[in-house]
Length: 212
Image (cartoon, rainbow, N blue to C red; front, side, top):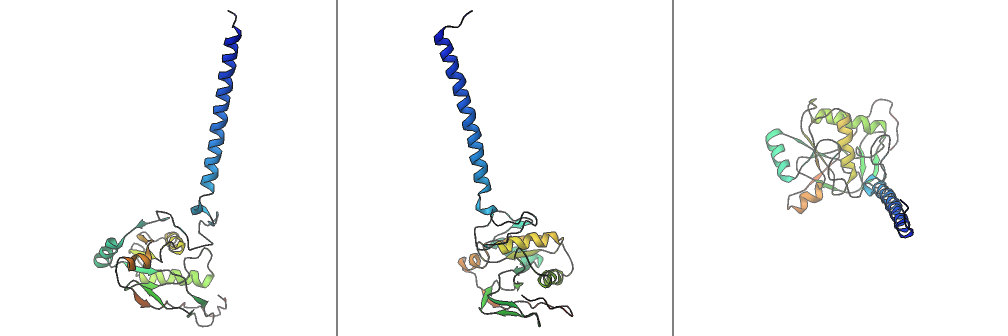
């Protein structure tokens, strides 16, 4: 049966419509992929290590790379019932650590959660050998050598250093890691008391001369 000219025109229009729809779908998927890749949460992440390496003061993901996110009530329970250790990983303000003594040259007072231990600079994307050793030694000391001991890691609000530290501690084999991303800001905003704290000094190995 021969197709009349109107039918042929209708068929051509249908084919054109299907082609346009297909093109729009492809373009939509492309824009979606670009949007995903442009997500600011993915910016400045080292593709090899997975650590954030720049702009640590920025919006953080909703979930940590390992462990569990907690809030103030959880912290109260973990500290009271399981003797969880509060680990403040806020950066130092100043010239870093003294390569001769290992003491931190801090130029600004820092307040933290009561009972917390301050381990500065361990949450950067790249740390030197002394800071890496310091982190390993301090976690071993604070946990009593038990990698299943609960550790609560925090910084201040929108701080990638606590996120990085969670990942770094997980890679060291610690299995009960808790992340408090609101940190000292959230604690204060909930009318909880903050107290002055001093950073733990780095125990340098003999012959270590790395500057920081």
